[in-house]
Image 1 (cartoon, rainbow, N blue to C red):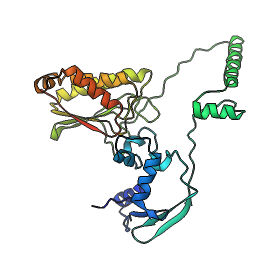
Image 2 (image 1 turned 30 degrees about the vertical axis):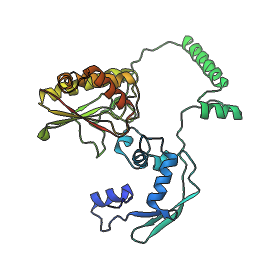
Image 3 (image 1 turned 90 degrees about the vertical axis):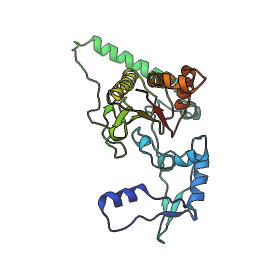
Length: 301
């Protein structure tokens, strides 16, 4: 079967809107065969998967990236300049363009006073702030301290923002049975759990291990709750979904698989000559660098 490339918006609009027209696949980009163009584009711009198809997948829209607030490579994470314009040819004989490529600047926040070429290079390439930036911070802190001393302090209570929605609000992710606290693109929560009771399968979605502060504790708590409720529901198999998981805290990965591994100890001991702990360490290490992988684990009653 020949691989075809389509615009996601066209497919969604036709599927959900009942439109009279049918989406047409892209056949050429900049007068090159679409597959050849995208293969070259992936080789140059994808960040480096273990296999060529992983680089290819990174070009395409991914719900697992959407829920983390990240762009796929072709739509907004291109590293190298692709040219001034893009022209598209379609299977139905129509074409679009040439259209200008748009640049997206992902702001890292306040850059401080970038006054020289060296400041610019140090910040955007090496990640270093100029010394003048810290001078400004110290001056601002001294001003704030003085203002506080000269006024009457009023006690206030602030509440950290948390997600009040149920699930991601993304059609690729149904309403979860379990979700980590503060689940949102801007929050600290990543984990969701689903019980497919008819097939006795539980799915634990972990798109990232990159957690900080209170989210480290709620991460482990959510994994524990998922395991406990899986047992109570009589779930026989667990799928750990690591799509687009680019890593993060190694100890969170180990903790997650250790919790699952408590229920796999007898399984590993009876099927291998290697200790269950070393098996789990290997599994955890593999998970940290995974980008698009599903792990199916059998749970003994």
